[in-house]
Image (cartoon, rainbow, N blue to C red):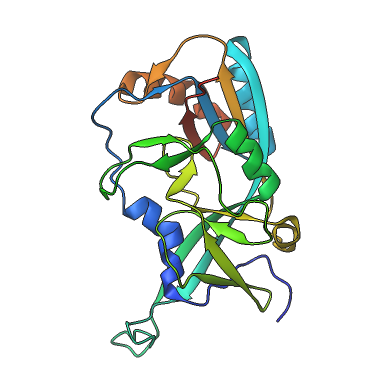
Length: 239
């Protein structure tokens, strides 16, 4: 099997890692205030730099991270592990998306308070709090975040990689539309040939906004619409 930047997932349950975070949650915001004093902007470096330039007059500091994204087609299997067959006799496939970072990047994000963990067990809730620790971060295990799946495994370049469950967590206030989060070692990360992308934390110098306030988000979207960044997320830094 030739070296490729695509992750080939061996079992359909792995779909839970990418889509479970997104489809298992409702994106409406209710309840108590959700203040934020920082943005997370991601995409091509030149576009992320444009976003930082726009906010330079209200930036206490900025912090840069690197990540990769992977989209995979996987076979849809029934409860017996047999592939689903369509009416025209073809095997049905699904699509899963992942956002991958190194363990060093995960440690930095943990320290910077941009990783958040889901509170409670209600599927429709995105109530979160700042993630304070990542189990097995000092081991050689690859860690996945999202809905727990004990049988989760992935295959990279013909090699099976066991996945260790972390927690029902993600980067920023919202689960990323770029995929479920996976944290891996440098060697595994480098073996993935998909183009590396940039993510920057922009900590406001002054002022807080509220995610429940549509005007706050609209203001940010208008400011950044010309940058063509892939995704805008939010963080509340408590230090």
